[in-house]
Length: 132
Image (cartoon, rainbow, N blue to C red; front, side, top):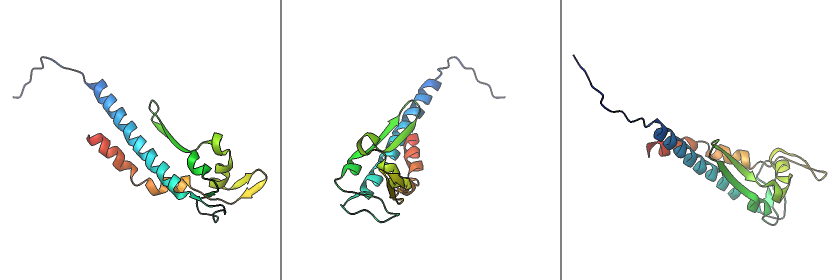
């Protein structure tokens, strides 16, 4: 017969949940940064437009400088892309194709391909944080 007597018990559920949340946020920050850097590096400064289907060119570097990423800790999500306050809706016209200031833009995606290029790394970011 096997028996056990429990004299004291310390509930560490809150500490474990906090550690899991903190690790998840750190992994999300690493993933967001990787996507941000990839997207930013694909944008070249060139006065001529990029060919359709390729990442857009930026004439003066504004699109590259407008790139940001942010992680919302409480809800655990990331926002990555160019700030609309700096480049307006032109980035959306480039990414998805469409009209901007009366001109038709072909699709020149840069955010979607950056995510695709990094999506195989994302599980490793979370695995590394869980094992720490």
